Image 1 (tube, rainbow, N blue to C red):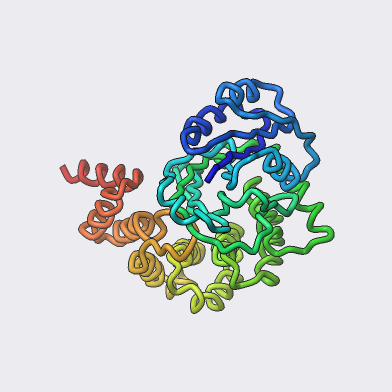
Image 2 (spheres, rainbow, N blue to C red):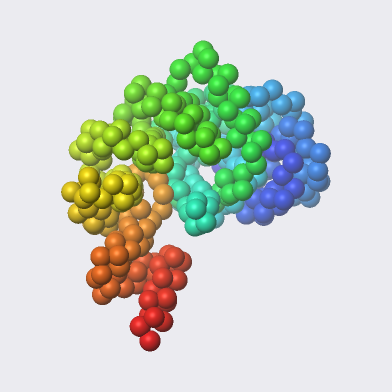
Length: 358
């Protein structure tokens, strides 16, 4: 089986070599469609033996992707972006799964980003390896248009494109999404538009699109649990507590095994009580209960989402709860549990508490 790498790039001199170094030994050819680079992107690609083709950008990612695929010669195509790095690629297992079959191979994507000064990671799965005849559809957040069976492959990809993301990229995506949504009221694209506005720190605009996507989306879709989680986050940020209570009441039965749902609940109940302790003190026990449910569920592979929502993140918040309520023994135990899993804020706070004791 011959495997081709197909990429679309523009001004990626900072990250392209890192990407190509990670994948060069796993593919038989590298094809790069350049949409207008003015830096050393082409020079770097050429140093890896890439076949480089120019593509005039037309505000349509599918057209650019399909152009790059058409220039490949392999049996299967692997698609990566310049800000991605191949972490794991078990070629023998991949060959065993795919040899002689027509399947759409899903790769694990670990998206790294910073939120409130804390390094975070989001885990998802996306189609990354597929037969050369398959093609993308959709001007943005493009997807493979194929009836091939979806299978998870032993492929893991690191992505840091959302770290210090340029404002112009948010605005570019918003322009494309709003244009598409004029004629195609796709709930998934509404959800993605909400994310873009959230990324620009415009939660009011994000709320409108989260709400529309939530009302009209397919609840059986893989993205829907994450839509619910992010919608809840945004409502909490907007302090629309009555809406949060209603949404939690409606969805708890559906997501009793989703740790991120309960993590958001813990955050919400904390903010609700602090907003008016006299009025909302009855919700105080739910803070502890919510984080305990996260830990009881653990990291559920059924869901895509933020890494640590079933382990070190609720452990840290539960430790803070115990610290505030005066139970330092329990606080230290939970800080230590999260610290042992490598969570830096817990390591720091545990050291501070131990130093204070001395």
